Image 1: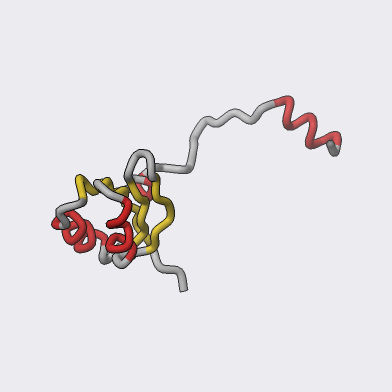
Image 2: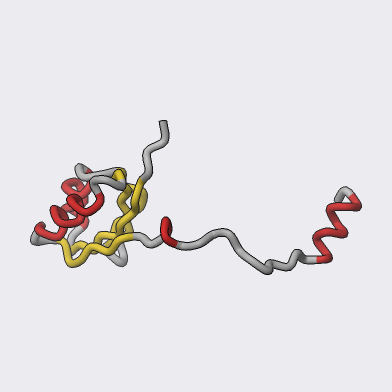
Length: 91
């Protein structure tokens, strides 16, 4: 059973608060240098989780991921002729 997930980027002030962020979803990545984390949650709970995280005093801002809304079916994409030749040769 696949559950649709939504990503969000959370900017925070200190790495020690990362443990509280982990409790709200599936933590994918956390940057020590830029102080942000990427978190995935269920799509139905996305809005509620964003509101909860924004209420924390150590969270600077929360941004949603726009990946599900980006169109991935490309039109008029021309294949590379050099690659087609290599595939026919069996390289």
